[in-house]
Image (cartoon, rainbow, N blue to C red; front, side, top):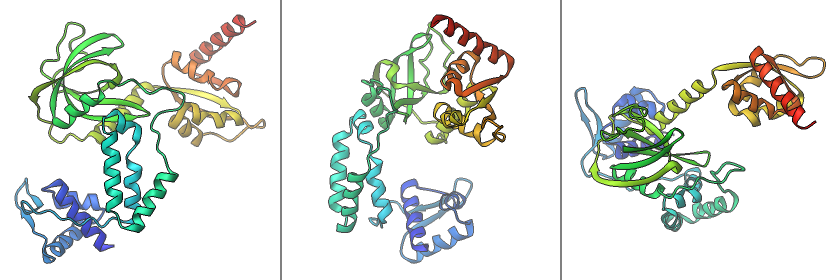
Length: 335
């Protein structure tokens, strides 16, 4: 509806500041011409929308103008009570703040929406930790989160698999992935060290650090400037895509039983699902052939063994030999 779109446009301008018409059109999934018409409609209704000309121009609200209008729909109000995951909020030192904020929000909602919010909390619970694995100990998470928020330099003592290093970091954001906290940070000017200088990519390089591996962190008085145009979500997606492509460089040819087809997505995730989508037709015994992206030979052997007798490696020959040698050694050990 146009009223919802006008409200979204107003809130975008209020939260983002100066924004171009093409950016607004992309966000609202409408044409640029529609944005022009909606801007005119906001102006006609008394909202002070200003247009700045030139290469750095765009639309913005007059200085000091803020709307108190929220117009929450049922679904939007529900989502607010699904957004606060108690465990991660507690990790960040925000558990009490989250509970207080939810109480205030619930008190401010109209009766009907407040009732729906209570039902959401009674019927849905979000648990961000993966199965069968304890959460990482993250004693430094709250301090790191404060440095992210305050845009303060961190002096960090970090444990890598190749040894310990000290880093000057410009913390850009935190990501919770599968119950594990990661810090995305730019390596600062004081990053060099004798235990592996240059292995992090040097100054101005953005890297990802597992928060549980920080041995100590100290917050400096110095602030830093965020890289122009840096977006945490975009960086994370690009980083995970690069990691997946770097790890899964080989393709294994497998035969799978009907039970193996059920196990594959559980053991190999999205890679297994993609492989099954391109599987050939079942043979007389119900087995299918697939092409599966796998990691190095050593890791692939361990991963494929989790499928037990429900899978057979057809190729490449080196992987089939490696699996046969492993199975033979196991048979000898348990003979």
